[in-house]
Image (cartoon, rainbow, N blue to C red; front, side):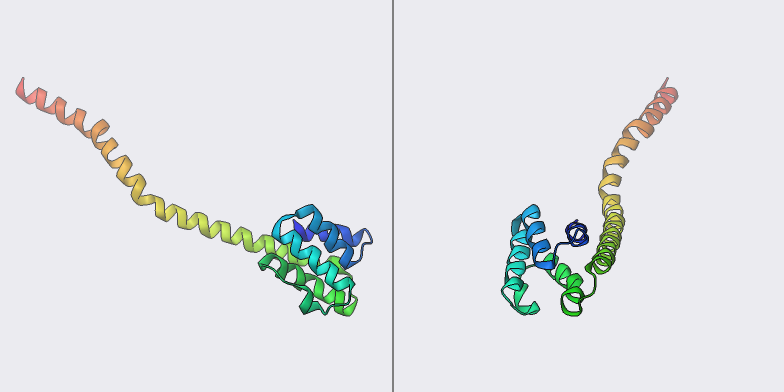
Amino acid sequence: MVLDLLEAACSAGAGIPRALDAVGRAVGGATGTSMRAAGAALVVGARWEEAWHGGPATRVVAAALRPAWEDGAPPGGGLRATAERVRRERHAAALAGAARLGVRLVLPLGLCHLPAFVLVGLVPVLVSMAAGSLG
């Protein structure tokens, strides 16, 4: 979402430092603070590497905006491509997590359903067979 907001701000005509400040204010938290600090550092002339400090989210943003800052390329294409890549990676991670969850649920569900099957399915049959053979 941050990459999409940055792409919208840049396509609306904001420069990279101004877009970082605006999106950083909108996002808030540690990521927003890091983005605002990077934008402010770029305005006062800091080198690209010096301006960026923060977690993985800010590193992704920095990598997406670097060609636009250093080479003057339009930032929209890089931001869109990076946003799509991040979405694909998150989707793949969610699918892998769902697959792992299915494997992890086999034993607990088996332990819950097996006693229920025995009590509901087998015990009445055994009781009726025992009653039929006794009486």
